[in-house]
Image (cartoon, rainbow over the protein chains, first blue to last red):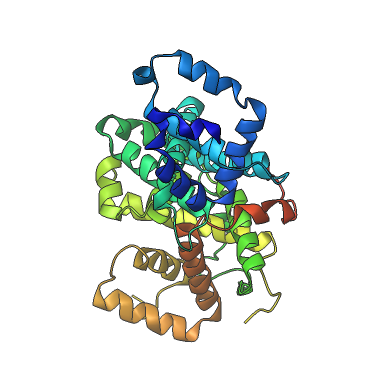
Length: 262
Length: 78
């Protein structure tokens, strides 16, 4: 705490206090971890450097690190890593190059750390991290040079979802009865459904998946998707329909059924 | 032309209806079909659920994650 008495840091102290109280436990414990790894040493280093060259953010971090008393739960580092992993998993579903996905995740994580005040109320750290990532990805998709990388005609020779045509007989009726799904009322059931859906998304052809995610996850209007990917409206509808029906069959086969056939 | 859609066509319209309003005739025929076809009602419900879950993907608590039973192919690297 003695570091707070330094004149150049004194003005940061109230802010740091606010931050440290409003930071979620995940972030805070992450900071505590950093403190235990390289505690006072860095303070010494920083004071040896011209204070003006020190990024205000890292100074803020230093102050927080000092003002929070250590009592890190064992999960802290893990929560942070899990958040990163989770964001990365989503980014990779949407973005081709792993390096680009990494960058977007990195930017999102920085945003999580930079604006702890925005993280309030009911939203958990993850919800908030995901929301930021969504914005970053949406911006990236909207950047003009991305169009051709999202959709390229030759890649669409990907095998069409083989099961979709086997579903129907010549009259276009379902060959087999469609089992109903359990309503995921409990939190646990919803979470499980989400993870099944994530798994099933990976089984879709990559381009189909991206179009689906643009629509359902990022919430783009279909007109915008068609325009950005230079697809006809019919083509767009077909891709989305195929994605949804593919997911539906996959999720059904992953046991999201009551076993009751209506 | 049959007054009712086939189930195949009904599924296409169900998907389309999640993205844009259907025209009056399609919408009417679809509703008639649904009123008579349990399979398509199940499909409708499932597509709606996918729509809903899709928008909220990734937002359930991270801290629950390690309690989750392993999902087939759940490796984040894939």
